[in-house]
Image (cartoon, rainbow, N blue to C red; front, side, top):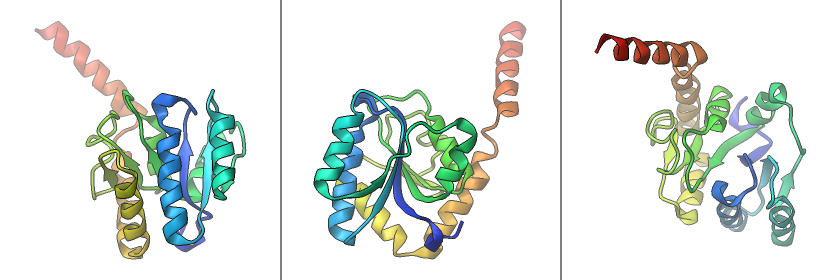
Length: 184
């Protein structure tokens, strides 16, 4: 989907729990809302912080959609409507949401606390790996949106780079590890 046809500026997809940092996402959204005039965001997920998180979005006057639980098979439709996936985390062993977003051509912003950082999400290649500074994240988003060719490059690289992170390659990696163990 071309950048200008995407409905949502940023999206959050994951559990609405402290570890997934929904309130960091909110801080980025507040900065974008202030600097861009109006934004629209998409929230996918559930968790103990859902009601407080959605309430704070309303208080800030940020336009958002929260479609509730989304079946796994319908997720690509939602990702393709978004310009960026924001994936902050205090600690995440991987982050399948990054795979899902990138397969839909959505650049990912994440931090060093995720397993996808510097393996799947390569800074300035298919997304951004950034310090947990809401101003930095907002600036990267605005700068990229102001440069559609750069956005398109990130989007195309996301689609291309995620291809090697598939089930067949993951299974082969496990087989190779088992074979290596038996051989040594």
